[in-house]
Image (cartoon, rainbow, N blue to C red; front, top):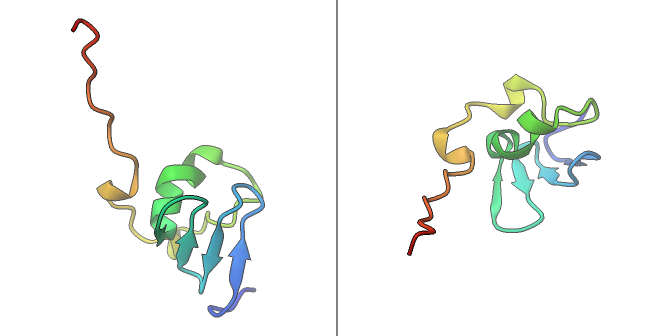
Length: 76
């Protein structure tokens, strides 16, 4: 069992989760377990993923996932 003062490294995606809540992505700012789940874990579905416990993930907000890409007009 992991205590809240330890960091975990995910063998699936390589992110680090510090203090059981702060996620350090490979690029960009830090995030939450919910953001990690929304962007990676729900799609990867690997048995070794360390971010599958719904109680630890918390509520996934609309802004946690990727935004829709804007429409591109190729007729210009």
